[in-house]
Image (cartoon, rainbow, N blue to C red):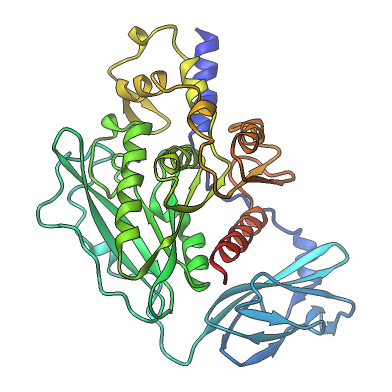
Length: 409
């Protein structure tokens, strides 16, 4: 009994949404002694501003400067920042092994729409009920595709999913669009266990700033405590139903007239990484590339080891803040070994994983790159399950490099 409880506790940690950020603050004394002249900077395209690293009133020399996004802003060896195009970048000043950062926002001459729609919280949320939502889609909220503006903006987009039993669900998500003419490449992002679409706000804004349409959504019944805005009961949720959600989303986004259907990518974190890998196998000829943050490919193995038989599984039970049904476990028990299911996808795969992840062991990702014909594992030293801010920045920058390489940007 103690062993089973221990396994259950570990599994609870395994299936955390996985995108929580842990920060590593600089020491208070260092912050008082040395700082950048600005930690936040707003510039219009073509304008420039010189940053200085100061110790009191004295400027420090021999500083190494770096931009996280040279397409948005570049920085000279003297700290002069020049705005290149609308978007966001982080300028880092490194001195004696310590880093000091300035967040730069570049805007065009035109007034941009607010990235986060202020009316979002006032939107009708009658379908939300602590992860136990109605199975039927709200007839008053059919599939919506708002007009996409030329300036980058965020629109709420619902997609209707038809279930095998004839019922329907409404998948809620946010569509982040870049300032672009014609069709753009797109990336679909999948949250982890008990997560929501806003877990990927940072990534979605970053990709949209760099010319990509990004869509992050809530899995049907995939989170609780009134957070899930897609319909569906959490007790009906399984890995397979989440895979079907993603396939529905992929087909819809690929068909949009603003999307280049040949350049649609899938990305997932933690449990969302497992779901992404399964769905990609079923759209192998259409998915342009797959990207995974610390994928929890160990979930099937762990759940199969939690019970001696399915008779022991309760009809409903709470697991890490979410009510699940027996079907969740049955679905995993019936799933073949994960490495016999994935690996047929023959386009490029990028997996980013911390080498200190004791929740979703990196050994599964190391095995995965031997199964996929064209896969790369980027190991982040010292990172655990869920990245620090530095780890997350490194991850999203490498995802952008992957996207740019495969779209010719």
